Amino acid sequence: MSLILGGDRFRFLVSRIRERLWVRPLAICILSVIGVLVAKLADGTRLDEFVPRITTESIENLLSIMTASMLMIATFALGAMVSAYASASNSATPRTFPLVIADDVSQNALSSFIGAFIFSTVALIALKNDYFERAGLFVIFILTVGVFGIVILTFVRWVDRIARLGRLGTTIDKVEIATARALKQRRDAPTLCARPAGEPKMAEQAVFAPTVGYVQRVDVAALQACAEQIPGRVRVAALPGTFAAPGRVLAYVSADSGSPAEVDSAQLAKAFLIGGERRFEEDPRFGLVVLSEIACRALSPAVNDPGTAIDIIGTLVRLFVLWSAPPATKDSPTAHYDRVEVPELSIRDMFDDAFRAIARDGAASVEVSLRLLKALESLASIGHPAIRDAAIQHARLALRRAEKALTLPEDVAAVREVARFAS
Image 1 (spheres, rainbow, N blue to C red):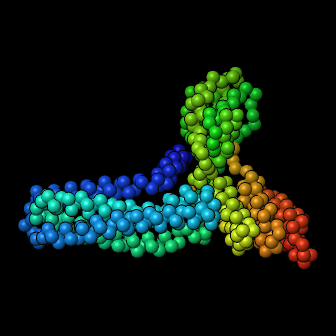
Image 2: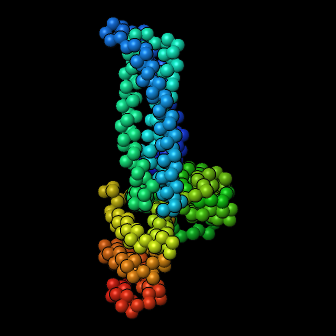
Image 3: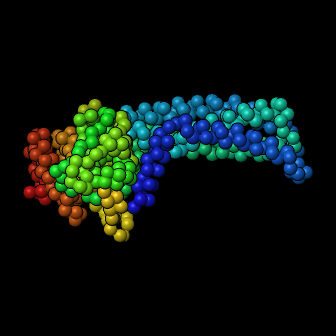
């Protein structure tokens, strides 16, 4: 189980790095400079006895073409990526921006174009100053042809991706993938490898948030270390996604002796990473909220796209079916962190995040109301008691909203017929 949380920490850090556009271009630029310097090492070997002679002029012509074109292509690529990011934010919701900007193909393309420009510039300067001999010229020629081929293949692949990157359907797919990943992670470790949260104790001491923001990650291992130092127990009160403020309790601490615990509140609060916005990686409910926002925007009078809302409802059904599936591990999870208590996610809260806003904004659309009720009926029949109860409750609320919003008696009758399972 410690491997699970260790992997979660690693994935969280990788996700933060992937959202920085400068990381990959910087790495590729460093490799480009190293490649030019490595070519010089070939001059100190017997390679010059076996390789053909390559004229300096031919390599200079190739590098000059690459230098002149790569910077322009990189500028064009950056402009196209910015336009795609703006399109994704406008057509879906600004909350999808971290997922769109982390697109691997686009980042690899930008890195390749900038890296090729740096490589060609450094190599051209070295050639102009007679830095290479026969073997070095051959190696730099091979590297130039290889870089040129990589750039062409990357450009062809990137053109296809950039044409889809800002599209609404692609954005929805990215949100679904990120949400499914977070749901699987929490399904396999519902209490983050700690004990399930129990009843409050008499001598608990509250630990408050030091700043304002959203809890992005809870370091259960750090809480375990603090609890062992007391010694005592820590009951987490703020899961990832919780809005934190100086008056908001993050956790409760109790000593094993029953007397009030001597707690380093600042140290405990450091185990809760608080940022300005919610993240997808360890907050499954955030993905449900974002999908609901996309559906509500599609249902707004300015957009009037009920088809997208219906598509989102189908996506939400898939995610809840995924949540109801058995954990990936065959063995039942044990509490690796036995001094920390973490509450499980509430199914009712997850249903509120997913369906409440859609039921409200889609109540006047008979197509959306019917599709929503059919989706809730499907969830009620998958054999999960908590999901069944939440689906029936939301079906009743959706029916009441539709009855008030729909004006045609035939539409109301159709909605009531579908909602009979919730009666």
